[in-house]
View 1 (tube, rainbow, N blue to C red):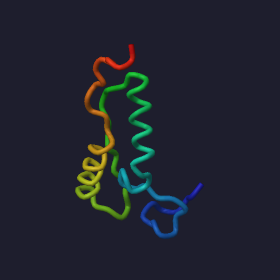
View 2: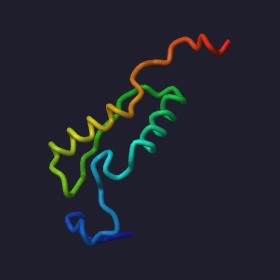
View 3: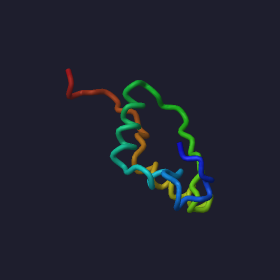
Length: 82
């Protein structure tokens, strides 16, 4: 358990990061695939607590990143799986 201030990013053992800066696309694609597999198609929230990036920049980068990995459209009929 790291009890240092969240502002002390350089000396903490971990720090909050903007979406896409802590884990790459592979992990996020697996997460969105798992959510879709169990039928979830609801809201996705972005929580910004990155200590080295402004809220505006973090939000815009997170949105851009998530647009690349989210599954937006439904699969439709599996005509090939009869």
